[in-house]
Amino acid sequence: MRLHVLPLCVFLSACAGLPSAVRDVPVTNLSYVQASGDPNSYKDTSVRWGGVVIDVENEQNYTLVQVLSYPLGYGGRPQLTKPSEGRFVIKSAEFLDPAVYAKDREITVAGVLQGDIERTIGKKNVRLPLLSATAIYLWPLYQADPYGYGYRGYGGWGYSPYYGYGYYGSPYYWGGYYRPYW
Image (cartoon, rainbow, N blue to C red; front, side, top):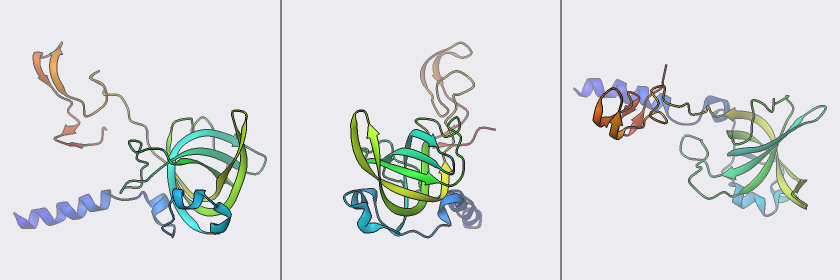
């Protein structure tokens, strides 16, 4: 039995952790909260931050993405259940399509802190940390359950047109873990 557990652990550990797009970039352990007070004092520091896309502005030679910062979890995904930390701006030399990098999409970026940039939020001018992107990872969207029971992994007691009253569960839920939908 033990021989079967080891390959399973190795397989699962390969699936966990940061996506390779942002994992392979060397960074320092500087959080958004530490750097946001005075971003110019941490200039040229490599960091990994994440959050939710607020706005995308395409200029002639670069793209600016304004992000609402959240702390990153173990797998590098922004933890939206935690309080927001503030805003920062990503500067990318590549064209980032606003239809793909849409509002409310989760994003993780690894890059170099370039100081700060002035942005207008409502009628107020604020200075936000500016991060020159080395690698960007846009997290996939959750898709609705094709059986109409809400999001994948949802199950519960109630009425189902196929099973009547009782427990109906999603075939994508494994007792606390979600498996991919093909």
